[in-house]
Length: 273
Image (cartoon, rainbow, N blue to C red; front, top):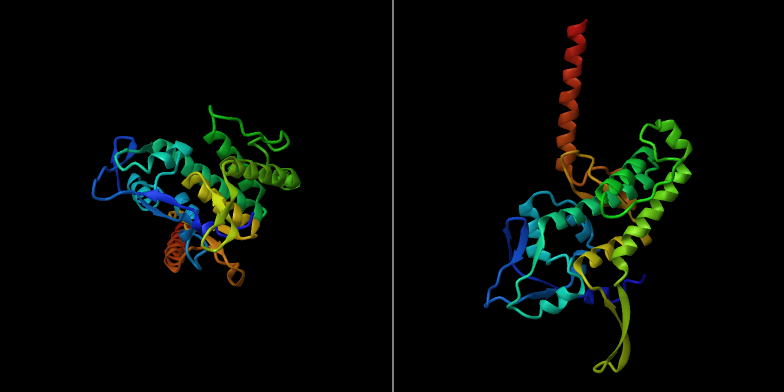
């Protein structure tokens, strides 16, 4: 998948509000839909790509701000792009639907990290989390050899090849599900008098999974911040492969926690003595 001309992909946004369990666009006759490229938030040095920002959303307010800044996910699929041409149309998506997609993106990112770091227990847990997320919607198939929660870590390590295969297959299936409507088009540029390639990406969700796909194809290392209270993801660069925190503030916060925990443990040991 070549990323040539991909930044010319367009999506629309406008301010939104929360109404109950829904995110709804605000009708404002003075402000029409603003068109932009989601890929302007992709490939920036030392910045989280758009899909990583999406996976880190937690509160309803954060979700509302994300939709205001980047547009609806496009859960109505191709029909959404058509109605966004009309300023009078009010669009809405439920917070539950959006949260489902956030959880799904997180699990896939966690699964990819577990594969990269060769952690069979984390990989198995991520597969089970995805299966639980889809419960009642669709079936996530896990090999019988690892489909047991009571397996010891040593058992899982012996079955690493099976776990890795299941994990890669699941990631490919989940991402391809969103890439089905993504394709390239041939156009003729009259001013340049030549044929050009253009991307057709039907939804914002598809755009984010396209970014994810391009990063995987590029061999990028993706990691969740090791601070357990931080939901952010980041790219690990070749000159900093030992990085486990997304910024110094998280590293300092976790160091303080570890220090307090160590002091408490020492007090307990002294009390026992």
